[in-house]
Image (cartoon, rainbow, N blue to C red; front, side, top):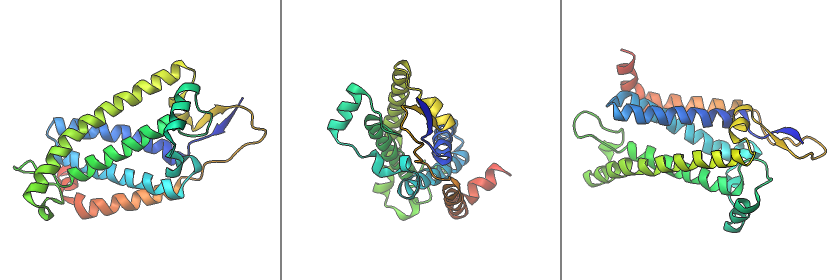
Length: 218
């Protein structure tokens, strides 16, 4: 057995920043802190868009194509484990589900209003029926996202009991693999992803986030 770098710096940062962002979104919504909620939403949207772009141009284990597996491969992974680098077949389905749920949550939030003080930046461009539907989706989709998070945590615990240290790998970037004779490089430098994220975040904040930001720091 030897260690091999499986996750690049951006993927690891994305994972933990997303945890913080979702917690902030939930807390700010519950406490009625809508300016913070919108800023956290724009941050999360920039983070997710960068992850999807990195899934095209980034590291081998970050590729979106690496998440595509047949149902047979998923069953085999659940029964016998998965020796592949990066996300296993079963885990890949969970990642895809997270991407979809997050996109739905973020995009619906852009068209949601509380009919009192706070409107999403796309409310003015949508019909009242669309805005009402987006609000319903935004509220109910979070329940699905919450259940997906619980399932994800449960899976991590189960894998840990089986000796697979998923959390440690997502912190250090390295995983224990059987000796392959030579080091296999599957990761890229994360700096391009960082630049893309900064540009996307800056664009969102300049376009939509200047008002909630000014309120937060006033």
